[in-house]
Length: 94
Image (tube, rainbow, N blue to C red; front, side, top):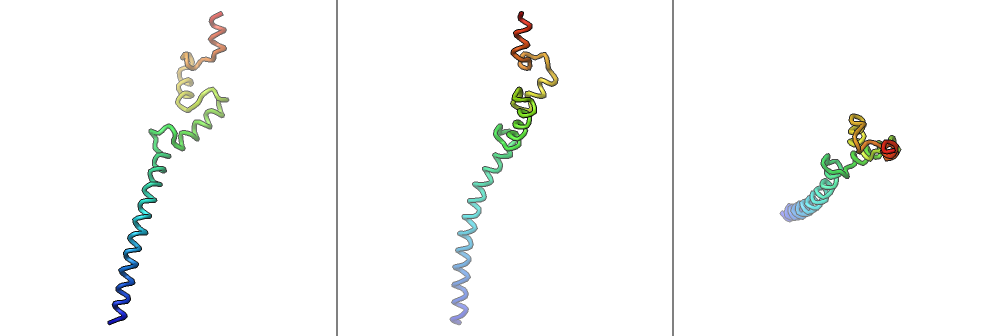
């Protein structure tokens, strides 16, 4: 009878410690999940995919376009004022 009381006490202590560790783990994962969800959120301008695509577009266009949207706009609307270079505007005025 004394042995079973000893094991019951150990199991209860382990169970309580397990719940505490589980609670801390869930709290930590929930905080990290917020950070991860913001990194891949498509509405967030600072998400990891947008930063990568913007960097590639900026490098490929020699800094003329800062993101994929502006490059696509100028591709389909080459005569738009926002897509023309300042040098072209000066030449047309003269």
